[in-house]
Length: 295
View (cartoon, rainbow, N blue to C red):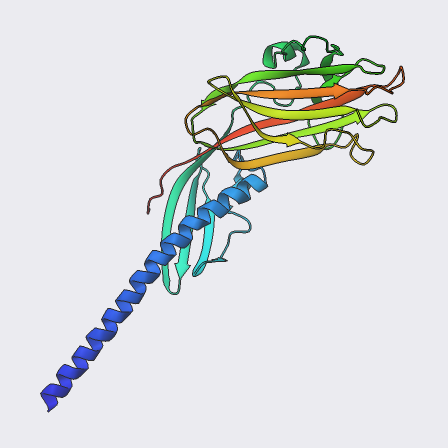
């Protein structure tokens, strides 16, 4: 009987150990999934804070907002090293089991030629202008110091000639610093402002758009900025557009960024009325990350 009792106790102990090992194995897999998901949270956090340049010691260490965050079956913390490009390290924990994985993350702004339009002398070189279409008024375009807390000291300013039915519709564009491969993950940002003199009317047009141009010559429009008519509530106000996670064509690379403006005074404008548009801080960010590994 003593032998049977000993064997029974040993068997029970083995069963418990096996169950404990199976639970830990399951938790280990869950912790890995939690750590992987933490990377996505970290990328969004960095982009939300416009920390894509990853410069300065203050930007390194534990990423704010992602410390012991509840996620799925466990918690996750993510830190960023000071390397270039930086290494993100995620720790996923489920119960008493933790998994630590790391990957490199690189975010490049592909608009390298005067994205803040400070160098007005080379505007025609950095942002060549397409000729206006036939019949459209060449109201003019140039550099202006905007002097506000939103943006850089200078912005791309466009305007119509004064008077009724005056229109300025064309675009400027530049070749990106490198082509965006098909299927890439990108983030597009810019600051913009619209304004007018005079009361305006329903046929005023103050449309501003950013277009991305594919290598085959067709264009993609990730979004259109604001309503086509400037209201009293938003005229003269700097706004920021931010579109992220937008996938490029699955088959064509993207090679250019285009700033499109369509400004019109309307048919009841006074002889002194004009329409204005500004672009600033143009960013087309290419987000690339390595496969994760366990240190």
